[in-house]
Length: 110
Image 1 (cartoon, one colour):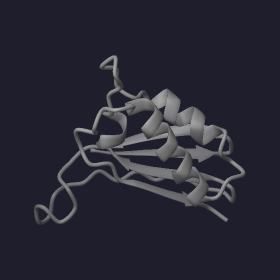
Image 2 (cartoon, rainbow, N blue to C red; image 1 turned 90 degrees about the vertical axis):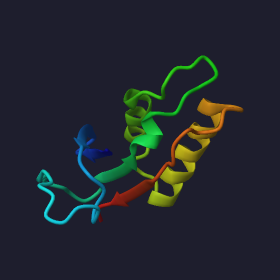
Image 3 (cartoon, helix red, strand yellow; image 1 turned 180 degrees about the vertical axis):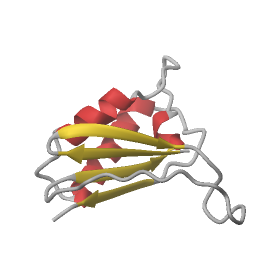
């Protein structure tokens, strides 16, 4: 599963794409979503490892926390947003090791 969060004109839109990993099966019927993007919009593409992070109370990281971070990152570069996400991950998990890999891609439309 891939989670895409888009900051479009200061609003967060989440798109969840379920399916096989790219290239895993020939001719897999992937879904197609279209979104109009504008200068300043931010796209966060992440694997489910991000939203399936547990804290010490066995709570999963919620998409609202990630959305709030993105909403407040409008003036930041993709590198700065990734750094903030890494800080959030470390604070959230504390001493707990992630159970899944985490992939994060941030794109900012100029």
